[in-house]
Every structure is written in C-alpha cells, then in structure tokens.
Image (cartoon, rainbow, N blue to C red; front, side, top):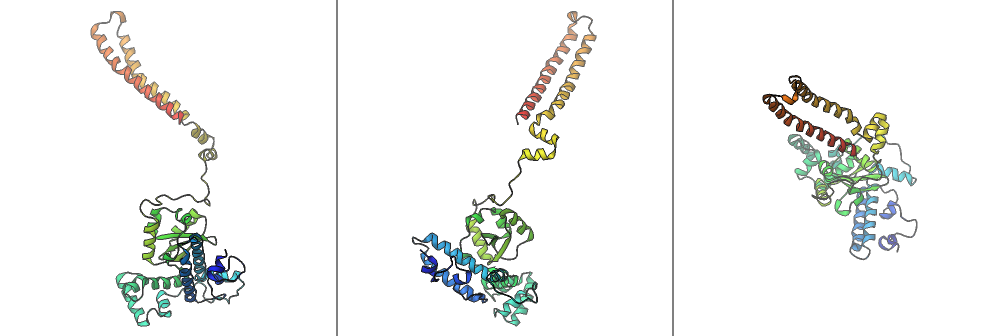
Length: 345
C-alpha cells in the first residue's frame, strides 16, 4: 500500500518524496508559518490511523513529516537542503549576524515597540532572559517566545506532543545527564543527532553527546515546560538510570593490550601481581624472626647446660616462646595465604 498516495494524496513518483512534496507546499517555500500550518494539518490527518491496523505505519509517517518540517524550518538546514535540490542563493551580506530576540518579536507583531522597552527594563530588574521576561509579563505565550528564540538562533521549533522520540536515541544518555542539562534526545536524522532543548546547549554537553552518539548535534527548541514534561515521561525515576553504549563509540582497549603497550614490566605485573610481592614477603618473615632467634641465643648463652637449667630461668623463657612462636606462625600463615590469593587473581 502506498501510504503517501492513499493518506497524503501525493501523486505517484519517487519514494520517499522530497520534503516539500511530503508537506504539500510549493518547492522552495520560505514562509515558515505556512510550512508549519501544512505540517499541523497533515499531522492531524495521519493521526486518524494511529489506533487502527496501520498504527505502526502511521507513527512512522508522523515522524517522517516531523523530520521534514524540522528541516524546512531550520534556516541553515533548509539552505543546505535547497542547494541539494538545485536552488541557487544570492550571497548573504551578514552571514553570522543574529537579530536580537526583541526585534524578532517586534518584526512578527508579537509585541509593540513600546512593549520592547518595558521587557528590557523588566528583564534587567529581575535578572531574567528576554524570553522569560516577555512570558512572565504575559505579553506572549511560552510557545510564541520559544518560536521567536528559535528564529533568532537559527533553529527549528518543535512541539514535543507531535512526535515520539526514538528509543535508540533515548537509551544512550542517562537520566542524570538529561535532568542536569534539560534536553531530550529525539532521533538521528541526516547524520545529525536531533535534541530538543529550551535554549542553546553548552559546548561541553555538545562534545559529550558527539562522543556518545558518534554524530554532530543539532538542537531544536521547545518550551521549558514541554522539555520538563518529556523528561518526566521518558526519564522517570528508575528509567534509563544508566546509558547504553553506542555502536558508534570506540570499543575500550583490553587490559592485556594496555599492559603490553605500557612495557614489559607493566605486562609482567598485570600477568602475575603476586610475583612482585614475593621478595617483600621473604624480607618481612626474616625481620619478624630476628627478635625470637636473638632471645633464644641469649638464653642458651646464659645456661651452660640446658639440661640442668634453673627453674627460675626456664619458666620466663618458655612463657616468651609460648607467645612469640604462635604469633610468628600466625603472621607467616597470613602472609602466605595473601600471597597465594594474589597469585590466583
């Protein structure tokens, strides 16, 4: 069954269709609001099949149109995608410049120029970001502020209620890391790890995720509330406390190879650590036996004939031997057992 044709009305042709055809918008459409409107309409339509016999196909198609929407509403990714389809762009005059968030809100008619100054003063007075200040002043809704921030930073905006993150992406980061940095892994698309977050991510987190997944990271923005709800759903207490190891990560080097690389002495120690302790154990045993031997020699020298020793001399000596010999034997036994256990390890 051709779900693209039956459900979305896409004529027969290459499969899968390109992002514009999938979202039913004209080729190289630049109006983000129009792209999102078509996405919302298609999302609602495909969801009708989510509970029937085609529930799996429905979810697959929902994620596919979501990925297309995220690509076409991300200026950087859209430019690359359009160029791959043959579109030619005029050189940009300010390739790295970013419009201030308040100007973005004013440009799209979300706030007035008079309200712009009020937001700035409120933000400075309360120590809040522009986004949080505009929301707390109830000038814009949280999702409107998040969309404006996405436009300013050059990212896409995503409504996390419209898609289901893939388990393979969720499993590779532990709950503690997600809660610490407030983000949710979504999936890998176009050799990029897509993560939902409320703001720009730190470079340390980006580097760690690159190592865990083996792909560069591309954030998409969502409201802080949506991020927290997704974390509570997919990383509830007891879920994903430990991360799985990605197949893209380099496998850890075996200890035997590490010992070999460290040199012959290190390799010998790794092979049999008990051998290094044998000389030390012999020295300890000799040192412990010296006091007993000296005491025994002193006793013999004071007695001309051991057979006719006086009782006053014999009793103290035997008492000392009764204590010293078992003590020395116990220490020797302990060292011997410890030596054997180390050799077994």
